[in-house]
Length: 109
Length: 139
Image 1 (tube, rainbow over the protein chains, first blue to last red):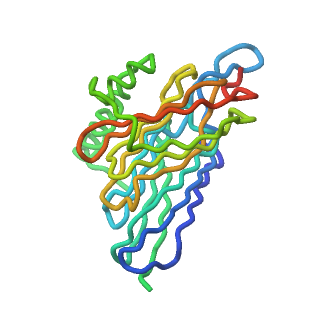
Image 2: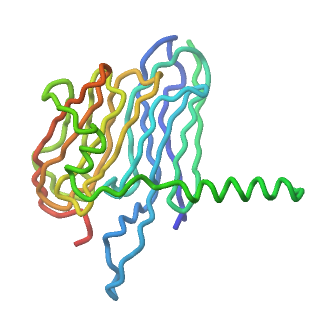
């Protein structure tokens, strides 16, 4: 189930070279844990995002492996160094093979 | 977009290869998760900060924070969940601080455990008891 999955990312528009910035990401996803049962007692199959990565100009910032214990609408906050102007690339990997992407440009100033 | 026979085979083969990759060995207990992560190495008590609330009203979304200077990886486990795994953070060269914050599910009152692989290859462990008023596993 991958309906209405929408990534949202908060990155400052500019930073000074070498500055550490805080990045916040949120993606709307039900994160069905595979533990719940529906009204007729059948287990609802697991359907989660199992991996999240953030890269800056191709270099890794963070790579998160996720288990079903991550809450609905997975939220992550972390810090990144900005050595030069460029682009942050965010990627989420769904159990069903879908890949959701977002990117944000940042300037030096 | 048209595929030649050769391209179709290549694409199909790559997809099959991805599908066959193991999903990570399934480890049932917290001890097994820890053993797999540390390889049985000793864990120090210092060097890793785990922030979690003492009381969480709603186990469906409990905010946690982990931070360990110079760590390459941090593993977070919920010892009282049906499956203990929560998340593993791997920090790349552009991580300004080995810090991450997220929201997790807790089935009930339990210990949340974090283990960090530090820069020198040693391991640090931190744990915190979280009281949960309403469980987060649909029970």
